[in-house]
Image (tube, rainbow, N blue to C red; front, side, top):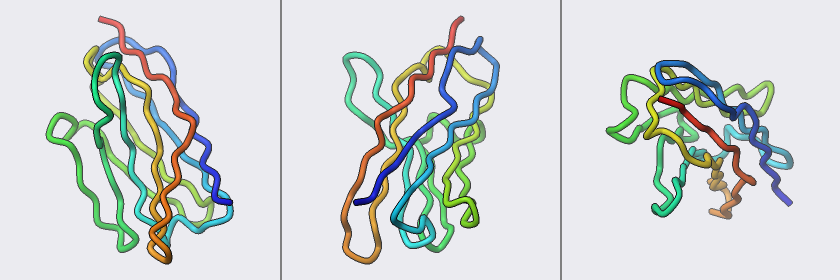
Length: 117
């Protein structure tokens, strides 16, 4: 069974930076599409950034130029580097993985990011 474990969330002041990490087990992240989603209180979960098995990336307009998604095949992790954080970035951030082999989808447990003004 594929498992994802997120880490790196926390409390940061506006303008600060955080780096989230998603560690996968029982699947190679290089054979998956991995995305970071977030869900703020009272709002729907939204895609923040995604990296394909071919290394292509896409970002929500709200984070372009501030967030960077990357993959480390050796460590089997996908990271989200977040800069210039804003209070509206406050949310629970979830890692999502879709296997390109069988399209199975797995979610992580989520990590809280809080940006104070």
